[in-house]
Length: 447
Ligand SMILES: N=C(N)NCCC[C@H](NC(=O)CCC(=O)O)C(=O)O
Image (cartoon, rainbow, N blue to C red; front, top):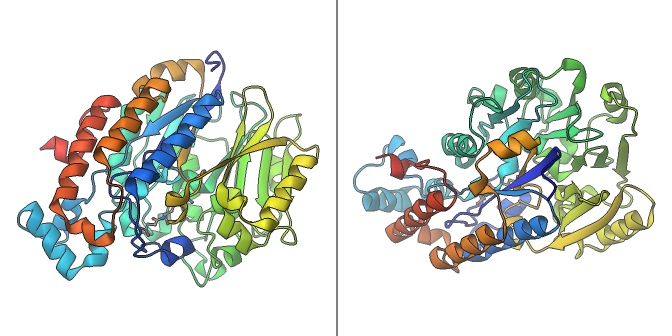
């Protein structure tokens, strides 16, 4: 890996030991459809690690973000459950099983929702800025914020190189789903770029938002993050996502569009208006900006939602050229696969793709792009981060063995009440903070 230049690292969320299908996300059709299915926490974590390893083997910088302490007993106690851990779990299982599911979710694996990240080339103070997403639209996601903030600070220490903001106010007007609704476009990673913020509704005009499913991210949240990060207004573009596609299950922009450097790959119906004029106005460099629009005639919105074509990662390989990192559901969809063959045959910037089995995550509405948080890093910033969180052959082997030692092969939602599962999770995470040198980031470690 060439660490002498500014590059874009992917930090993937490690799937946690309680990964399960609790049907928690109204508006996310995969989540709704797989309620109550059996999950395999071990398979899910190993699938995610395999993708991380493959990206490392492609010569790309790859990091790891830790899972969270689940079930979150403190959240249950804040809601009035009392007694021992076993009593709290037992009462919640008996009286509020859906709530137990919500405090037991491994949803922190989808770290595209962990924060919004602005590279130092774009920010007024020349540091990398992080704002953890408040994820207020879904209770089970909203409880991730404190641990996410601590994990990000343990990997990217606040100071000369990295700046960490508090999450936005936890109210619907400032609903913030993080990098899933943010795309940074540039000629080269180390050069100033434009930052595209995509919102589901203007909190001041909800009637122009989606009517069936919720808009989880607001214009007001995007504008606040742009201000906090010290971005030049002329380098920011704010576009509304097409409410009609949100109402068909496109609950984040990264389910219908993905960008990398000077390429934006998006579905014809992704935005309320054609994004090209606004992007062209903010594109400050001589090199071309490639907008690859996929017509509904080739790939329907339904196909986009079932295959997660646009939730692929779009990366620049060390040898140059763009590659799509696809979920295997794209290969299983004839219309999508035919489109992709045509894309390869065209002489466009996307030159190859790689297919991965991420079925455990996909069955909860999380594809390759959901599982990663992109962080552009200069050589100095690469040297300043906690390198124990960077994946190499050694860390991959250690994490694989750690998963095989601590994770269950099968899990049902009724297993969530098992106090033994909570103990397994805590001992696994205690060991993990040693492996990744994170310090005591979990509540159970702070007693
Ligand atoms: N598209 C991006 N960037 N992230 C995908 C997040 C999926 C996640 N699913 C869930 O949280 C389902 C959990 C459950 O139902 O068990 C969500 O809806 O927030």
